[in-house]
Length: 73
Image 1: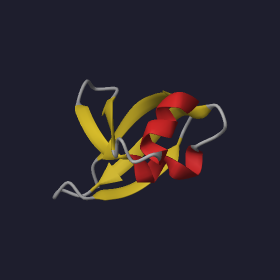
Image 2: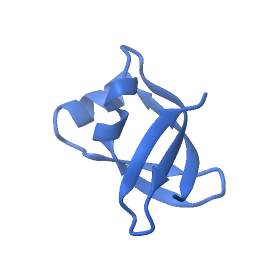
Image 3: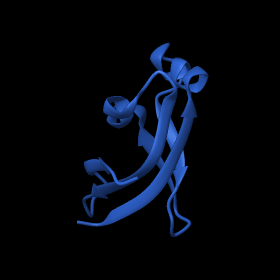
Image 4: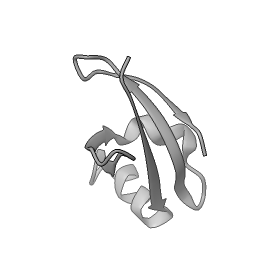
């Protein structure tokens, strides 16, 4: 399965926009420069009072379907 590594930095105010339904996807840039639009839902388990911060590895199929997301830093 292909994988990508990216960092996320969303403040609590930005997370609130997703919670209210104003946004549903997060635009990220991978470490190799690729731009990806990922569904906010897959980040939910990493939300804290401060927001969402960290470096993540995501796997996806050849068809582009998301596999797994794990925090690596």
